[in-house]
Image (tube, rainbow, N blue to C red; front, side, top):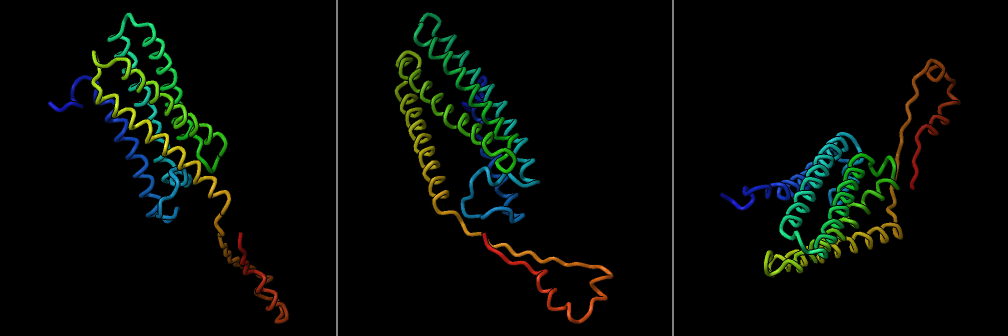
Length: 220
């Protein structure tokens, strides 16, 4: 029996695999339909236009449910293994609240896309990644306090590494957003308007040069 088949260990595995699949599938769909630039687009940009928006939303809702289940199981596990340690119990309750809040933020991201309500989407991202990083810090501290009786040092160092990696990812994302705001892309738009009507077809010859105004070219 593999380690992830024991008890409820399948929950965090399913959370990671399903969340990664939701990003990958929406990215592939957006690329195939030419909705985004294939060179490392923002995750939110791959979930703004149907049909990838529908796929992005429903898969992230399932990820939010898996996140809630994983956080609750971790809370019950720590609570059962440390019944008389008040410091660990307080941190464990704090971790439960932070984890549920982070999962709720993921649900906000899924249902309020960037193109619909941008600021609500940003709030969801802050809850998911910002509060989620604090949740990871709490779990890292719990692992430190629970060693060596219940956790080995390897578990503590792995969680600390993942937490630092998450923080570096958040910082790099903020810097990339600032760079994007400072140097916006120039998008060229070209629209061709075709009018079909009895008046236009029977117009005098002198009106023909004015028809060139129906071709609009601009840049933003």
